[in-house]
Amino acid sequence: MRAYRQAIRFDRCSMVAQGGRTWHKGMAKAEQRMKVTVLGSGDAFGSGGRYSTCLHVAASDGTVMLLDCGATAMLALQRAGIDRNTVSAILLTHFHADHVGGLPFFLLDALFESRRKAPLTIAGPRGVEDWIARVTDTAFPGFGTNSFPFPIHYVEVTPEAVAEVAGHQVTAFPMDHDQRAGPCQGYRLARDGRVFAYSGDTRWTETLVPLAAGADALLIECYTYDKPLKNHLDWMSLAARLPDLTARRIVLTHMGPQMLANQDKATLECAFDGMVIEV
Ligand SMILES: [Zn+2]
Ligand SMILES: [Zn+2]
Image 1 (cartoon, rainbow, N blue to C red):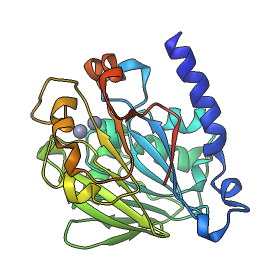
Image 2: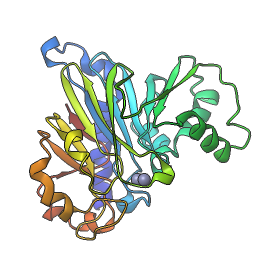
Image 3: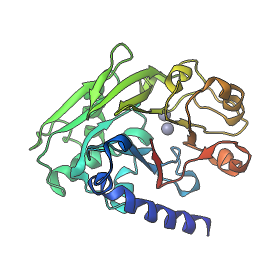
Image 4: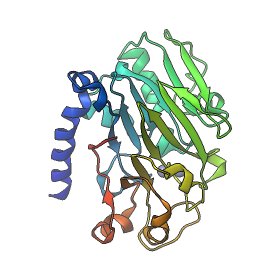
């Protein structure tokens, strides 16, 4: 029943996600906002029947970017009725499959099904181009060296410099997760005077403080409830440091089974597949 209710919520929210362009029509300039749809709020294991991480970020001018592209991203995009050709950029936090595993499928779809013509930007931590070649070639052997009928621009986003990705000013912050799959980064996306911050995967690290500082919204991972891990955040550790996180709105995501079972005890909102965060 719970899963069914979630499905309904997803579909209702996906109506909003379908048209970045429809959504911004008639919106006064002073109201320009980013709209972040959480297409996947789950962990690496599909806990709670949730999709793995993928955020649909629509700017007020209709530009669409995916923030992470987890293994189930194509399922989530299809279910939400999102035309993949509307996505102009994909920004990655790190290279675990629950954050990047959907990209080979996205590229395959772009080639054979969506028949993409427009350029695609793939941005992420240092080494992103090499990572994508390896991930893609592992998923579909021989595909990593494929030539595509549309340009792919790779952008390395590092903490040393603000990068522009799909019109967003992107600032990267090093996270403390698993350097074998990194560098692992959280991002602040700034646009039209608004700031959306996203942690990606991490345990508590002091760089979460500047990541969150004054942001209009922060989406932060919270994998367990009261069980500290070396790669992920738990609610108890996060709760103890909440006074240091000065984002105006904080939403938890990437919840594992223990956190899902204890959502009611958290004093912050918990994301769900299809949740829309207007920033
Ligand atoms: Zn990870
Ligand atoms: Zn993850």
